[in-house]
Amino acid sequence: MIKRLRRALPLALLHVMLLLAPAGAALAEPLRLVALGDSLTAGYGLPAEAAFPAVLERALRERGIDVEIANAGVSGDTASGGLARLDWSVPDGTDGVILALGANDMLRGVAPEVTRKALEDIVTRLAARGIPVMLVGMVAAPNLGEDFRRRFDAIYKDIAAERGLVFYPFFLEEVAADPGLNLPDGMHPNAEGVKRIVARMLPTVERFVSSLPSRG
Image (cartoon, rainbow, N blue to C red):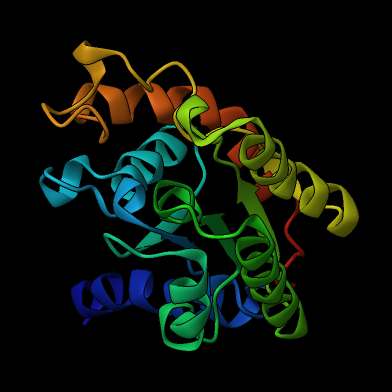
């Protein structure tokens, strides 16, 4: 009889501890982020574990941040394409979105006003759902002309300033045009390039995460 009581006691104590724990403590869930972008986000030419969202998730977890980052990157997507699929790419319950679209708009010479409007609409629709956005910028290639470059490059800093967004100016900072950090196509980062991107962007992402509303 005594042995049975001894075996039952730890279970009884655990039950009491769960009952006395703060509401929701036993139901803690990871922070849910969505990386909404194009092939740079999707991880073109790379295994899933080497794509930007997966590498960023691991880096944040190493910093003690319990997070899950969904890869909502679609190769070839424009800002308008991201807007069209926004509702199913960013499900209810998402705590924040890392928005990185516009590279394909630039490569295709889409009018900067069209890109700007699509990005603004994405931010507006997410704000209406209570989902904060971190904006990641892109810069225009020099061969597109000075006028296009000026209008395109202004999109991201203008939206970030007007909407009060956490902002990282250039997704490919220190990676663009470096043969050692890109795939043979010269446009998409290789695994080492993704690691460099994450290392540079990490402080900004941490600032974004710290700015998110508390669930409690």
